[in-house]
Length: 273
Image (tube, rainbow, N blue to C red):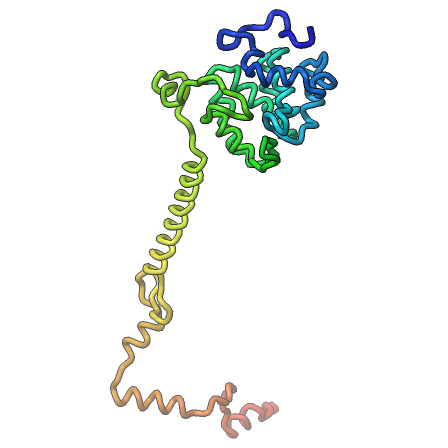
């Protein structure tokens, strides 16, 4: 009873969901200690506690021993949780191995259009993942893992179900065109460059139409300094008068000059009658 699919489960790709895992690997999972101790009577809620404790992804290692990642994947296929629960698994940013487990399950069970819509946003996730295989531990990344799910035929030692190509889905209007992250980045840089070019052209035009230093022009009008320098008379009489005025002492008295006679007349007391 522990190895049977939950009652009322829907067939995936025309077969029992557990049959998506090859018979040899599935029998190895049933015999593993992790399956017997950790995966017994798990539900969609209690499975999260084990998924967040994962520290590797992968298929089989050593003497064909299945990884805990593969055991939990088979358990998901066995209990077949609702789609909303899987989407919630996928949107959890804090636990990357739970997200990887949900991405693997979605790739194996969902429709092609839903697979592209749900997994392509994960190509922006560049976090590291530890992969365990027959060769030992290797390092991979979330975007590489998702890209292999979308393009490869075998991932984590499992043969993935065939999936319709994206261009075919676009021709049938089942999915919209893919938005490239690199194209968005290039468009952002081009817009930034055009803004900088506009600001430079504006500053260049302002400097070309502005007043150069020492010209004496403002907005096309002639300043008093320019008129004075342009219309100065060059006649000898004018130059002499200017030289004479400059030679005079700057310390001229500003008071009126009064003659002594005038001063006496002013100070004489009035005659008595």
